[in-house]
Length: 256
Ligand SMILES: NC(=O)c1ccc[n+]([C@@H]2O[C@H](COP(=O)([O-])OP(=O)(O)OC[C@H]3O[C@@H](n4cnc5c(N)ncnc54)[C@H](OP(=O)(O)O)[C@@H]3O)[C@@H](O)[C@H]2O)c1
Image (cartoon, rainbow, N blue to C red; front, side, top):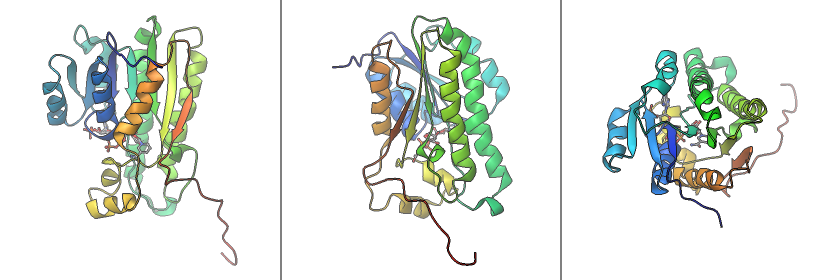
């Protein structure tokens, strides 16, 4: 039996306006934690705060804004210093081949999934390291391990997140900071709508006939990792819907 009470803890969750981040914020709130809920859509953050009197600090934040991120730890109000950091904000843009990809989309994925995550982590590590107990949970993806056509830069950013997480463990050895990389498979969130620039029909097709993961499924995995005894850390966890598996290697025969 694990202890799932997060009372006395405070989590900063990036990308708390939707999907996995929103569900994680709600799950930790349900366990008694305070939450700094970060994202660009302020109205949604305020909606979350309204439902949890005094336990949510809504933080309008674009993780690609390096200046705002660097000054963040000092700018948080008293009582909202995080001892849990959930680096969840991220996105995939497009599903085209690498030879025809839009470089702006590639840059945005790198800026958000890599640069944003690294900057937020760097900003909070000194204070996390000084605590008697702290957690960093990075949201990777199975796309960082298993290639698929059109996954090019998105998968590359998530491979970075996995390796950065493992390297953080090496740097933080001797401290009480646990670092876990949670690597979901197909989850039915706003992810595909963002990937296909708001084309909801295309997004819906991704999940057609599949019982995909939900944000709540991943939030429950995160809650379980956080509830493990403080001396136990799960470095990486891959989570897929049962209706998803990695495919065989492909071969192109003939002339081309
Ligand atoms: N869904 C999947 O199948 C799947 C699978 C594996 C991994 N993941 C990963 O899971 C994480 C969450 O995705 P999701 O599925 O929950 O998708 P989602 O519903 O689209 O949520 C993405 C979240 O990221 C935030 N975000 C995006 N860019 C941001 C920025 N520049 N600054 C701050 N926040 C930003 C969004 O908030 P705002 O727009 O309000 O800023 C939103 O809250 C991502 O890292 C994604 O790569 C998803």
